[in-house]
Image (cartoon, rainbow, N blue to C red; front, top):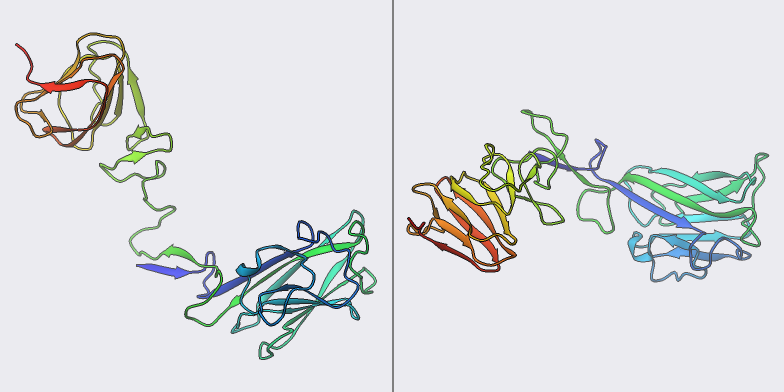
Length: 305
């Protein structure tokens, strides 16, 4: 059984609001907060007057989220926009120039109010209010805010902090078996990596370059065969063979007795007739190879006596 719940949390419906103000915003570091203004808003009735929001984009903020700067008190008034069922956790990190010390001071309001859920001020070590930077170079240059708390269960807008977890009394999992070339691989599965090499269950790819060499582990390893004339090969379910001919005459592969290509009982020999020819074979069972792809001139036929 699967449970849809927040990552690393037993709570059932946490929501995260994050925002960064100052550096890399349209106006850069704080340097022009000399009057009341709106520095972030996703409320159509409250337009932004000075865009100091650096991330995320406005449309990724909750509907009706607003941050207002109040010049008379050097305060930032935050309206969450989301209806939290309990008081959320709030973390504020100021941006400041070298050697400048400022501390965040927050005052939470009741969630029953429709706006100004949070008042943020910045103070020095003596407790005196700090004014945002005048030149954008010295002092308080911006801040980050992160708000995490539970919301009402049901369909929500924005991005909530959700993730998949496994609830299985029969086992504990450190990763999902999704066949991406790492972790545990399902039996008889096919793995294709980004560079389009076929990999076996243990990730091995072996290249053989000596004529008439028949490896003993072809049932467990993917073969990458260059310039090899193979005879009497028996398919095994899930087996891949990648063959490539370059410059050798009469390059061929013959299947053992009662084994065939593509369900055609009279064709059990694969012949490469030109240089730079290749074929990719796959065995769906123990008596058949399916030719997935060929390049150059490759033909099938009955072995000549």
